[in-house]
Length: 315
Image 1 (cartoon, helix red, strand yellow):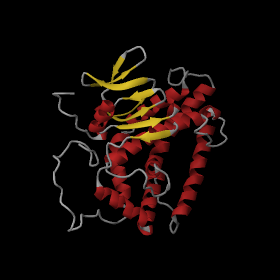
Image 2: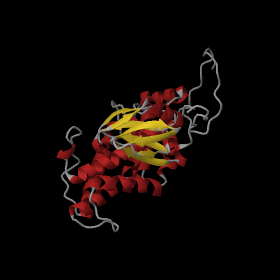
Image 3: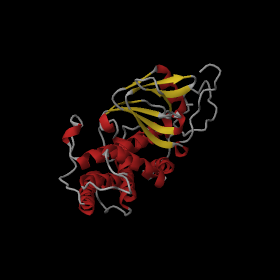
Image 4: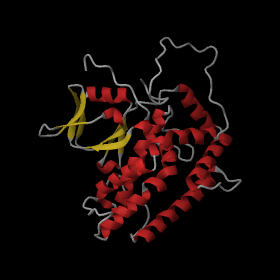
């Protein structure tokens, strides 16, 4: 790393989406971010070109690799098999106090929170929500519509459907379609969390979802879930169950095929360019301005140079 300029984050809209890594050592060798397998084979990873790296079982990470990922503004997420269970996440963004305070103020004000939830509903279903409904009532309406969507997709693709059921502690116990859905949504959650941090907000401060470390991640991901990933999961599960090719490809690894098709869907729907504007759009619906620093606040001692990255990137 000596003699090299530290990497600077680039906007997430200009990056590739997500990369799953397993069974290898992540390190920085000769200035390059690499995955080294048990045989010593190096795979160079353009870390700054990805929004998020999902680290599955069997992955080890050096201190220098974490440093380089943070400088590049790339989110590292440690997950279980197929990305289903999240254990920990790095935080290369989220460094804007004004935005964190703004988000918290919206969530704490009942009227503003309801306006944000209504905007999320309108974006998700392409129609205005029913009038004079509380957040809890809108949550119930959304839940009923989502269950019906799952049922309709199962009927369309000829997949046996008994509901959205899976146990994160027992991956193999879920049926095929639920495993595909879990893999698909894990990819989307990774991108949503990276976008929230890059925009300078907190993943835990949600509006429809609350009480979870990723509440706002679920809020944002749900807006795109049935556009970007859920249909792909059903298509893959149907092809695998019926032992037929999908777009000319024989499905030997349904979970892997689901990930690849979600990656293609992210690119096809231009999701990375839409995530941060969507976040700003739904928060602006709350109708309150971004807070300014109080007059008695201590001024910044060292002013950072403007970077190329998004508002929340550190660097």
